[in-house]
Length: 218
Image (cartoon, rainbow, N blue to C red; front, side, top):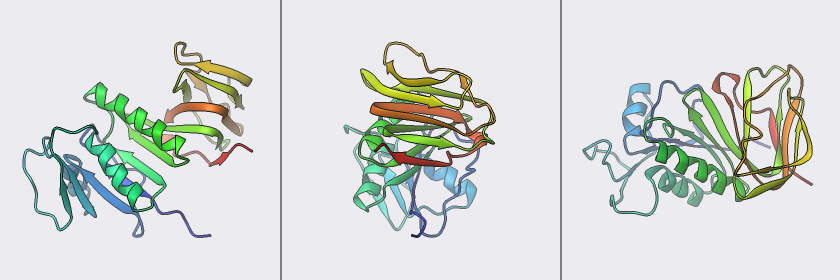
């Protein structure tokens, strides 16, 4: 089986570096001001999309979709929806944190929605990798170091198991009104985050890279 194609979206939030780079078969979308970041990196997006309030101009591009600033979704959410329409199920999102906290929270909700569809999506920036998992498990390599935090996205997440961390949990429950999973730590052994009912938002240090694997619960 070949490597799964990825949809990269660059937003207009804070950005320092793209440690995970798109390859030839991947789709790259610039969401409004994210176009300037891609230009700086020498990466030409396949699509430029947005209301262009961040850029304050409409650049010339062969594939451009302009949206009204009066809309129900953010530019990043619209870019992801376009990628979904093209059949992508793995998303790498940059420029989606920092600056306006409301947009950061909106992107956490976006990760949750994609996870509930069975997709893998990662929001990267501000020193973190953030992803969501629904009815599944994230497996981490023993070389992972630093902090990891786990939050419930929804009223409750049930049958939660955290293995190989400083603080473990066995078939427990997390709720949206208590940050019980904050500030856990990798311990130099294989570790995993599993939830059988509900959705978890999981974040760890960007320098550690992505998880080793993810799988659905049986």
